[in-house]
Image (cartoon, rainbow, N blue to C red; front, side):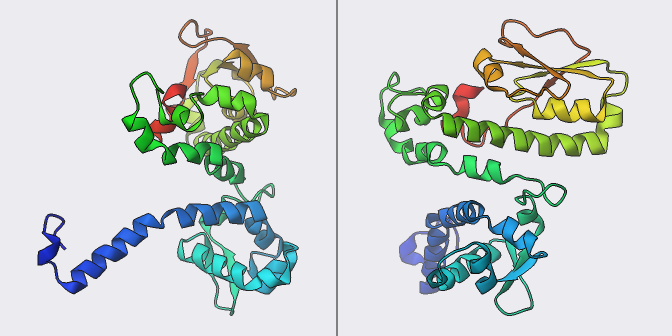
Length: 277
């Protein structure tokens, strides 16, 4: 159907197709919320423990769920399989891991451990600003700089993190696991070329140092340091993994090094994270 056509000129079939597309957008959140549910329940790890494939009744037992939840878990797995998170195998009522869900497996050497990233990005604190977009657009310029503040009573990101240390820890782990995943791929595929001739490197805004640790582990001759804000450095647990942490502000001073690592974050949620740029 032509997007510019008057709906009064559309055929019944075209109107039904348009309604189907509308429903697809309206209920798109069910995929991400179902994914959050699967990660919270530990479904990817449960399937991995059972050799990569499991039936729904066995999954109920593996997760220690009430048997009465079996038909509802079956519906959840059907939705997740349709979305590509799991594979509906040839055996009746059985599901296996896909490349996508293997990213969520936490067992060392078996997956990429990205479950913390999924959980943090689907946390109510992160999701709620999307429910406040209209209110932010209508508000006066000085009411809130970003919709995140609109959703959280005028408080911006770091203030909310300070008040919610459990979420702060989850967010930091999300950034760390995503950094480890990306940096491991970079080091494995391009490290020899990227780090040839480099004796020192500073990761600007490197969080808890996941990326710097990956580089230090692969290239012990490279002296790695992380420049972060003081409150971030203070939250880093002991065990530096060969990485030095420097508290400071990148806009004031960056420690000298042969190379500077600056990761550019995709601006996919501008209403949420502009204040972190």
